[in-house]
Image (tube, rainbow over all chains, first blue to last red):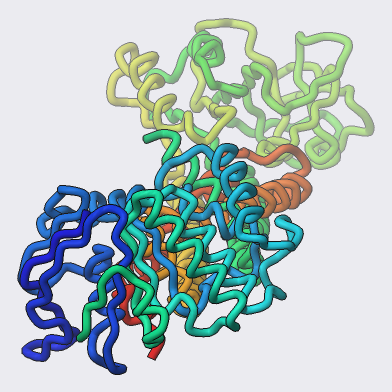
Length: 210
Length: 357
């Protein structure tokens, strides 16, 4: 599902943050990336997510080489295949919970009605017990992260990239998020978790240390 | 493709509704440009119309055909032919002036033979076989009323005439209607209904009478007045253009600042959209259409309000094309101004805004 060979990337010339990273992550794998702050964990995640082009190396996602794809094709691939979960939920507080969840459908070109139905189903499954039409302003941290997970899962991605998804959550909410990520891996998605939490990493199939 | 664009447009509407302050400011800019342009243009048009009317009245619509001294004169029938030309409002043919006196002992008054076709000269009398006097010429002749005898030429005075602007000078004369089509006239005064007809009519007049009487005829009109008229019109049009350009430039700059500030404050928002699969071109479209929507609404309202004001100033429905054009330009200015910040927002590195330090 994810095939990386010698990926190198950095923010300033001559100072790579990710150095020659290689891995093959199959469908159904749940892997963790751990390392000290500044070791390039999140950066690696965004390179895998096609948000930036690596300086060098090769990357194939779902069998497709992505280094030479243009922005439009990489964006389409992201919209269709990749679900991002960020450390802070990154919801738009001015918009409703439902609108936040279905945002990704816009860029995929999916019909809104079907997206809304899927969003309601996901919110229900994740136990988000709030009125879906109400603004996302006053959600608790746990609720917001579960809504963000629903947003990531809306397009039924085959690759899920999660950056410290439980970093700001209490134990109960962290458990819900982790269980859902495991469930997605069980359903055939490739899940990559960036985490500081060694316990969470130990429950993954493999751990990459940077 | 169409559905994808439709979804982005719908998302733009949601974005515009969510970013109320930005939307309100852009709507205001869209409103102010056409409303101000039309309000000021309305005043200019009103002033221009007043000046142009005065210039028109002052004689820029008048042409005079003069037979040179010693020439054969202009046949009275020519006045009739000229009156049938398109765009000619009225024609007045004048014979050579000669002084006459009345039997009552008054002073001499110049007499002219007159061929009037729709000219602003009102004549009243029991007969057309004789001379007509104005109040002024009657007084100078020493006549008590519109009746008497012009002793020097043995012609009776049979009634009154009154000439009005721009033929008021005729009131100093006594006149004799020309009945004979071959009677020679010294000059023919031609008024066209619109100043735009002056040059064209002048050319037609040469064709109509020039061949018959050769070089002894000159056609006079006032190119200076026409030039002044064109100058007034051009000056007002130039001021209107400058005003509209200044308003559009101001609106574009302000809209650019507003949209740039918005996109700068929403960096993480755009980063999230990129992560969710938005391409750069989709983000540019999102920002531009989210700007275009309130700009369009504001411009529609502003154009309508400005048009209503302009119509009220003009006392009738104004030409809607100007309002439509200024409104459209206002929308284009706002949209154009939103493109650079949209490109900046779409091109910003998503990693830098999404990473939590």
